[in-house]
Length: 311
View (cartoon, rainbow, N blue to C red):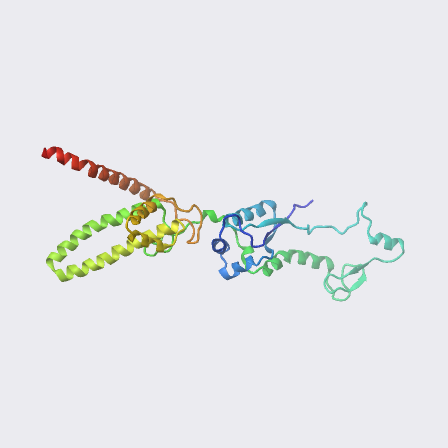
């Protein structure tokens, strides 16, 4: 008995809690297909994603689709290896025809010509067995061509293993809180020597120093804005929320939120999750954290120590 085969169907249903735009973006990346073609999958009609799969292969497709947010299902296929030979418990009409002294008849699967049963069609000349075997072999390709995209032939992998690439000089993409700490602290550290250099430049030439100061403010401000927007994207929030930093009192709490809250574990509307933190990022994070803690302790204890010295 041949192994059971399955096909994967999708009717546009989403897994609970998934958003349509996010799922469509995930499927476009998963199948490397045009977003317009992916949108055709959500018409409400069942679409055959892949057929002729073993049960393990079908489960692999289902797992990847479910992780992308698409609530697909597998359906067992009618076996293509059914035999038309007679069996003892299934007497066919051929037996009745022989009993009646009549030759069994058949219909050509290609042209529909009816004739006495034979291996070759007398009308179109095809070899019946070869024609049926070829049609069976072409069935998966024909089904794939009927779908609105060419992805069933592509190798599918779980989208959870995909990570975004870091883009330092653009606001696209996401960064986690640890990388946000490191990038912000590094930017602040670079700002201190730059400020000293600008002071010296202003003393030497007020005009040149002023122009350099304006350029420095624009560069550092733009980098700070890019880092904050990436962090907001990691939380699934719009970058426009960065303007809350200018709201009195609320801006201080908002900065803490960016430092503390964890980002979305999977893909969101701003793309896949950021790459894992490298060892250098982890070392710098703990270094900055220790230095920040020592600075806070020193700021608290230093006024008291100075007071004791002046008494």
